[in-house]
Image (cartoon, rainbow, N blue to C red; front, side, top):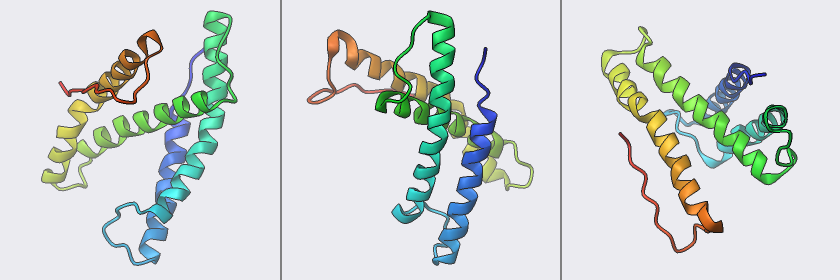
Length: 147
């Protein structure tokens, strides 16, 4: 079994289209997300995460014989993290190779794209380091680097 991430990315992209259209209609011209537009994205993403968390639950259950409760905050946030991490990997890669974008914009996206994976992996490792011995993030520092 595997999990196909592409349908989730397609749905996030549809949501981004709705968000950007609503932003334009409310006078936002730079495409920057504001709270009222972000709510649309997060509501839709949370709905997608519910589907993905079932897939994650089933995949882990298949491999391990057990899994964490799929209807939990932890699994919701894991699924959201996977969706947004994957979207970040896709969008910067795609924009760095989009011939319809100007060269400077492609180079900017390429610069970020080189580090998306290391930032995400290092953030995961940072979280795991904090969680060792039932550790908590309060009053801690766990810097993550990009390499």
